[in-house]
Amino acid sequence: MYYWTIKVNEEKQICHGISIISNSHFPFALYPGTWGYQRIAGMGDALSTWFEANACYKSSSRNEADGRCTLSALALAKLCYDTILEYGLSARESCRLNKVTPALEKVIEANTLMSGLGFESAGLFLSNQPVSLIDEVYTFCASVGLPVTLEQIGVAGPTVEDLQKVASAACASQESIWHEPVEITPDRVAECLKLADDHGKRFRSGR
Image (cartoon, rainbow, N blue to C red):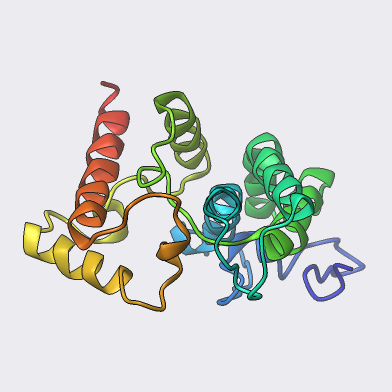
């Protein structure tokens, strides 16, 4: 099932193409010396699967396949989250060293199969998750090198107007944010963007 995900040089056993390092829509190959946030975006993308599926399940909204979230999808989404938390750091190190390891294969399975079958739509702050869970997610993201602040993705000091523009676009009628089991408004989304950024700044500063 991984024939397109992992390509191994049989002589040197070097991994040349691994989906763990990419968003599923924008696959990247891994080569020595090419490392950055985009190389681990796949884990960040898949990490949100459980929150997305849970939001759809709680709101009984239609998912991306125009059906209802099933218990099987919810269970796979949670397994995806747990797998990435447990093996993500080891998988990233395997990627950095161009090695195929059991941890890497587990996270590839989470990124492709589990995430693909379980995804819906959601967000940490919009869905009022407990602080302990938010900290768990931020701790993992920081450990593997995923950004936890807007500045880390090149958006330094956004104005209220900047956040409002992004929030308004996210709240367009056909966007998946409406799967959330809570009231959605552009103002609330903008506030959550700021909350997420502020939490990331505090997290990075150790406060």
